[in-house]
Figure (cartoon, rainbow, N blue to C red):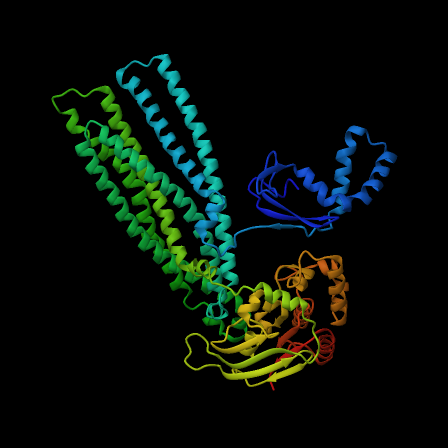
Length: 639
């Protein structure tokens, strides 16, 4: 229980099964001393994690404790070790069981990104990081003043040297704390960004995915990695560079030649920004070439068998030399800009900055040692700031370019989905289902694909009663699959009224709608994910699966004629399948897709040409299984 509520693991609601009925415990957060909970008087109190664990698990552990204690007595386990042994054996015995009693409260990944970071305390951590950077630079300047004062004066006393060593040790400690804070901020930002991009990928419109090939989608995945790495790292480096630039400007202003060094410093910062803009333009061209090659390579790999069978051997490598030449030439200009910004501009400033002190050297007034130390320290700090600025700008340029590919995923996460009304859930759970009742009502549905002037569905009206078996036939392109996707909630009609159990989608919510109506898409739109066979079958129901769910999946597989397949698999339902696992035939995949839909216990299943890959015997077997187990069936097929 203590490991569940980490110091940043709350809030949560825990349901206790008490004699007088369910009791709720509101956990705010976990602390080292225990759990912070809210009392009936709305005051926060600290509760030991073991107390909550005892309240949750006492009833379930009691029968096992007696048996385990008897076993420990027989084994002669010493008293000092009995508690640890008892807890270890209890964990092993009760590990397969699950307690449905804890509800972690989290902001959805679609919530405003900044609000998610603030909820994690990123604002406080960022303020701490800024303060630590200022302290580190202050210690750096103080250390430079100490050692420079003694070096330039020709005398370095032991006391000053000891103070210099202590300042350096302090810098190490401050740097360690700043690095730890920066890493924690990067971790929070990366987790929030990954979750949002994944949510956006799952909320993309089907038409958006259809317009992109496998290569373009893979390119978006690669670019999302660049956005995560470069934006976070480049942001921290840029933040550090801004602080260094500000401090360097102040030090140069306090130096012996502010009228010369400050204009030179501003000019040099402008040169860095100018070169960075050139680097951004060249990096954008190189990224376009690189992503285009990735897309082309993936498409060629996917269609490799077709190319071998259909394309003339002498033409299979046409255009490859031109693409490789473009890929080789594009980064050369980009590398030149990077070298110019990271090496020449940062190192060249040291020469220009020191040259800015020449008027002071040739002046009639003698230059004090302290003033010279401040002037040289400002030049060195400015050089370090320019180097950090160049690295940070280069990283942010890569992130900005990659963002052009992944922005669609980030923005799709904020797309509003229909949320169920509470009264709709109560009505749905309370209403008994009887054959003959109207399940689906469609009135004057209209739908057109984005970018197409003519609608694929116009004035479509139909009713589907519970227990009906409907066969929907039509020529290719007539809108059969589009109508099926509207019925299961994958698409929204542009006009018309669609009701399920007398409620529309806005009332039921997308999740509530898809719990009642399930689709078995066409073969090329249905997939086997790399994982256990049981996961692929039960992913729409519940995972990890209970023993009862596994037994039900085994039964459905047997009825569909997949028993021999399970007998050949060494791990049975837990056998790994997918592109890197056990390879399934088209017929086996089709029957797995049918089993996946049946195991979700829906009220209606829409089969979109789902039996096309089956031979006559397996088609009859699959149809018998569907007609026996599915309450309402819609089958889409060609005439």
